[in-house]
Image (cartoon, rainbow, N blue to C red):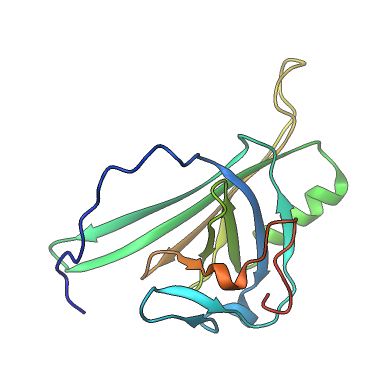
Length: 177
């Protein structure tokens, strides 16, 4: 693989927005390293059949960040992928679900507000880094759960090709996922 730039960027029109709409958590053992990746576009064109749990987000309550760590001395690079989400309303059922997250390794699909779908933790899995339960102090304060998943991967998060993602209606078209 050549390490030279292959294209430049022009200044695009203002047409994107921040934030995430939803995310799906899938079983690491079934999905990790099992996708079909187009070698030309580096997009995922097929995923193995698996059960995915859907988490829809309220506006301004979650984000996805991917940061590169580069070592000139060691000639290495890896990417830390971070998903942060918050869910209002404390309940026994949500507490149990978050406890389950904290104990496992996952693969996560993140849908951003521009309808791009990113696969987080594809090779090495995503795990819970932090999770908190908050009651708030004042009556208008946040009351609920905050959770952060992280993954360290050799490659940037793969984008799911449009051909496997249907129009967003709260689900991703079966049987692809």
